[in-house]
Length: 120
Image 1 (cartoon, one colour):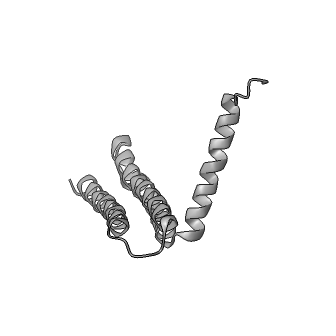
Image 2: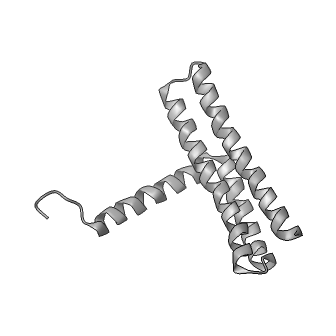
């Protein structure tokens, strides 16, 4: 490959390596992420057991996965904001609050999905 292009397997390998590093960093540095992973590990088998159909299982598991995704995005946003400086800034605080609100909504959405799937 003399043109400097990276092959598809090379790009996939790099993307996988970067993603793994991100997951390790989240596990190492983000307590909320660790707590939500534990929640996922505990509730995923429950979702599989209680979900009567594939669609119900998928909804339960997807709601858990969404919480992890939103937490990762919130952690990335917080790291980027913290990188720009430690002084108090209204916009930086708003950005962090909005990220936190997104996690909160994902948790509420997960609870609603579980309640609807399990009790209707």
